[in-house]
Image (cartoon, rainbow, N blue to C red):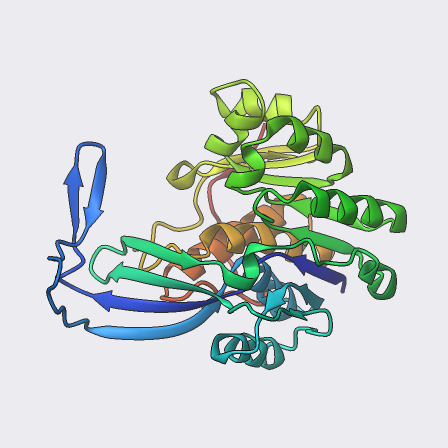
Amino acid sequence: MARIVSLGSALQDIYLIDHDDLVATPIGNEAILGELLVGSKVDIDKIYYGVGGGGINSAITFTRHGHEAIFIGNLAHDPAGEAIIATLDRENIDSSYVNFLERKTTGTSVILLDERSGERTILTYRGASEQFGNFNENDLDLIMPDWLYVTTLHGDFDTLTRFFKKAASLGTHIMFNPGVKELENQAELRNLLSYVDILNVNKTEAAQIVPGTMLTELLYHLSGYVETVIITAGPMGGIASNGSETYRFGIYEDKKVKDATGAGDAFGSGFLAHLAAGKSFRSSLIFASANSTAVVSKIGANKAVLTGKEKLHLMPIQKI
């Protein structure tokens, strides 16, 4: 098994779950969740506490798969931070490199969830997970990871560059799932891609980095920057190539979505967890899809993460 560092955010997730007051109301091509009157008091059916954030969600996938998972991120000394540390301990994730910031509070997301449709709106206070400049890339010298898995650092290209260069100097492989803030600066993002071994983006994100509208076009252009590229397209599945094999794939299973939170993290980290365990490119794509499907079938960003020991059924996937 591999030693994998998850670099990213950590949040406490607070779900407010209801079956009638948070119903999605369509408005053109968009929708408003709920019809809550200002000043009213609304009774919520259920409340659920969990933890999330890209760094936490991915680390949970890695450790459940049997890898040695190390989380690098920022917390504060408060109840939310204590809940996240308790989760890291319970999941056997190394928290030695967690930073506790003074005069900050731990990031928190309040998720308004319609229980019937699975539609949700997320109110996020990033708190300690809003900044990453205090991360020390020299920690990688002590850890000597096989892989560095990076989700969004909210456009902190200085920290990203420091860690990517350090990882490259150590022979550590990098999988990158950029976020909105990284995609806003396409030139700097493209410069980073020379360090990346696996790039995981959705179709909309891919079109922000390179020209193209079709999945095959986008894959072709991104493959000029990164050897292994995965582009997801929601219910349409996605496309992926590692330079020698290219696959077009559908979804693992058409299941009712109870909560889409963490679906992207489950797919990306699920792929790497399986691949780093010595599995094939094809089977890693299948596991990634299965992991994402499992996560959205339960409430919580990582509650239903798979272990890699499950017997998986066939899914639409074709070599092209």
